[in-house]
Length: 275
Ligand code: 2HA
Ligand code: ZN
Image 1: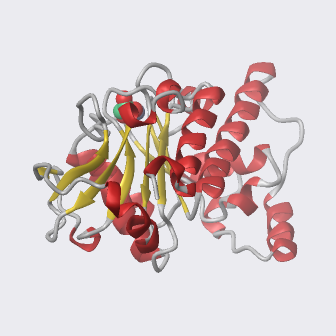
Image 2 (image 1 turned 45 degrees about the vertical axis):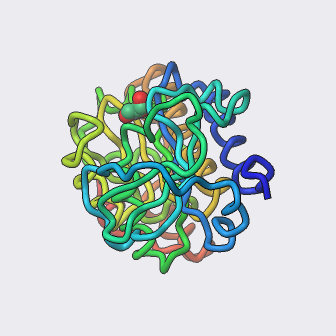
């Protein structure tokens, strides 16, 4: 099968465009990676190169040895992915040790996989283990309202989780485990990758202060939907805080406990503190 005709490739391209249309991908902002199923990699094998050079990932992901990923390119614009996918995205293979990658398809005009490859791959490794292989998508976006909130809320998992849960009833059902937050760090390197992947052991979402968000999920719909839900809730919080700094009424800790029973989710008590 042609790479561009494969359903997972079309889903990937559509998600890039969805993110662009949301306004989360100014210039070359954001990145997306997908861990391919064995049969998906097999289905496009005829079109994959095996002669490109192995390059260092910049970190070690031994559990991802031999996996194939679909990734956005460094310096590439989400805005262009739909128009020219072969220029903007790539299929990469991880070597037998989990230390190097090589480009097997795409980036036809040159370039490298996303600058956040270390963070993406470390998150993939953690989430693959934590979910028994179910999670396949890692998505990084520059979500406007979440970024704005990192200037005015304490950078604590409990505060972000609780405030975002309160802004929309669906939130505790969509992300019952909560949200992690890392303070400002230099992007692109191993340190921020380690900090983010630590949070991903507990959560499906991590916020990078003054930068954006990382989300993990099983497929494109769930992962985009998660990012969208968190950012929508952040938008409501920004609007609420702009109208008046205090709430006249809200969803209470007991309301959350009642919701948890009916929707059969476990909401950790550490997020249901008295204010
Ligand atoms: O430019 O979003 O974090 C890509 C990025 C880096
Ligand atoms: Zn970024």
